[in-house]
Image (cartoon, rainbow, N blue to C red; front, top):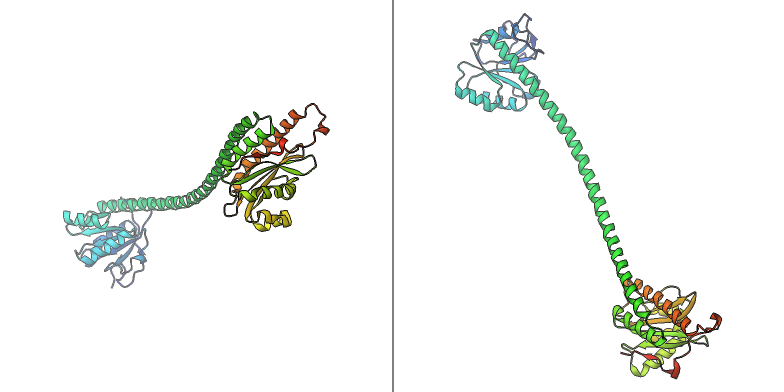
Length: 383
């Protein structure tokens, strides 16, 4: 027959002991698992627990599956000094259970071993009831506080984890935006640097050509300034004649055969220059197909070359055609076009100023065009 205040070993169903007045105060009545290997003093412990009105679940051994115990359960374990008991205690304490060891004679060695295992307290078997229940109530309160702190810590950790995930996402977005911003800033800095370079070039070039008030000096200065910045190339400047055709004003021969250069330039003045008279922007013709499309059958004169040409215009009037051409293996960089546009515009403005200076005694409609240079000699800057 099972004793009063306990269940049989094979019947783990908990049972509440009759409640009586107790000097110990339990805020909540936690269930108690009483694990005992001998029945000699079990009645004594059961009487203490019954006096406090606690639910008791007696057992002869620790459960093989600690997960069956609820976390707020107080587990009172008899110290039988077996390794199995200590292993089970460590496992239960690691899972957050409140374990109390009840020992015949709690020595310092037992206390140290219990502390390492995570046991909350060690009670002597012959502890007086009032002190037993008071210490048990203290253990329950500590366990309850610890559980609340751990629950709060888990909640904070969960919130912090969610916050960290949000911060990581924000960091990734910030890095992406920062990378884009750096790219934009690099592009802006590059553009600003290019604009500053162009501004410096404009000031330098303009100060040079404004000193030239005759056509030959102006053409020479333009070619001498532009060609070192463009690289080795053949160059020719064609001026509109009074007949409406174009004549050669100045040229630089880089790699054309000397015996055929004169014929080439003469045909370019007749066929190539007129094709760009009304061109508004710089024309860059890097391939043979581009040359044929623009010049038609006249493209054969420079068929192995890449051509760059532009019309120098002022007040919607063509004042000169500048052509640059060289071997197709050395194309003109697109990055040089802003510099050439600047040179074109400043050259056209100064050319118009020279025209005005030479014809200021005539009405504008009678200025006409530049004829061929006196004596029929072009400004030869041939290399």
